[in-house]
Image (cartoon, helix red, strand yellow):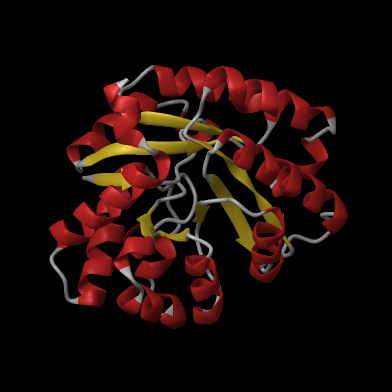
Length: 258
């Protein structure tokens, strides 16, 4: 039942051994993977990768960290792409106030455009929010009628509650395995499980046992084990509930039936 709700399988770090990476994921019990895009130039290759294997589901979007690669026409192109390809989500999109030099107003235009697109097509959004959780929450409220996940959540308990009230889930991955991440680990130990998704964000954000190495979706099992230990719960229970959450948010069962 393990579902990796955020993995960049199209990243060049996987070009040399992508098939082996996928095999190890299956062997680790990762049955489904959500693969979000970062810029328009990568959409075709991401589509091909997801079409090449079972349980790989694309999402298309414009990531705020790649602002210099985006063009205003990309939003119209994204609408056409979403209408034609019918992905499981819009994303990765969002706001990043950590990286210097990323124009906040330009980020907001792209983010708002993608939120409106997700609402139009009744799709969830996969949201990047780094030092910008309050601004992301304000955007979600302003557009309205949305659902989705804030991936790699690193905000406060109060921000988490606001997102839950908006029917948004939180994605937790490798950072929760580090003992120094006390606030995040406390949240993982106590949050309502119906709002939790597991993720790797591979090839980035490796867990504590592979610190400094390339991450991959098979490591989702380590994330699940860490959260189960924090909650003093069976690993199978965490896998089952978070997997069901992913199936519900991204409507994976309907896609399998189709």
